[in-house]
Amino acid sequence: MDCRNRRPHIIGVDEVGRGSLAGPITVAAVAARISEKRSAKSDKLKKFLRGIRDSKKLSPKQREEWFRNLSLFTCHSSLVWAISSVGSATIDRIGISRAATLAVGRCMRKLTINYGLRTLNSKILLDGSLYAPRTYQNQETIIRGDERIPLIAAASIIAKVTRDGMMTHFDSRYSLYGLAIHKGYGTAMHRAAIIRHGPCALHRASFCKKLH
Image 1 (spheres, rainbow, N blue to C red):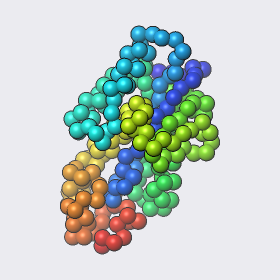
Image 2 (cartoon, rainbow, N blue to C red; image 1 turned 180 degrees about the vertical axis):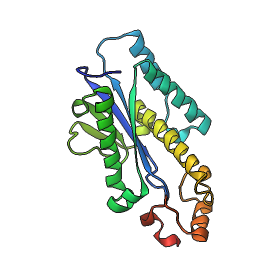
Image 3 (cartoon, one colour; image 1 turned 60 degrees about the vertical axis):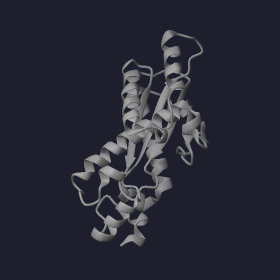
């Protein structure tokens, strides 16, 4: 979908991996055009989004199904999205909050470059403690936004499926830690593995100081 000269738009943004001990923080931004006119396409999209739920309330199989359905709407030009991940080294250097904001900004630029979306003029709705860079003045951070705003819920699913896939892939390289199971979060199994083997390149040193 080329969004040039088409407005207004609304963008839902969410992240996955903020509290993880290993791996990146991943942000997804999902954009839909706000239309004053009713159409079969817009009605279908609204009905679809009404049924979406926060990724944390879905099983992995359900998340994968929603991800495929979101991809279908993208193919039919109803939705567009962008994804950005910031890795452990950057998180250790600038902190998790700034890393999250950095990823949001990258998503906005991708939406502009790839789809011509005028993100500076779009309404940006972010979940929880997420913020876009200050240049995006029309932004709102909403507590439990992934439960209340369908576009944020869509972003949470895209971010979750994307990051989970990355961590499963990393598991083959760093097989001592069980990354495919816990996706880098601080489970008892993961903490025990860090204590036993020490951290690997994926681990956030600033998050693992007391474990080795």
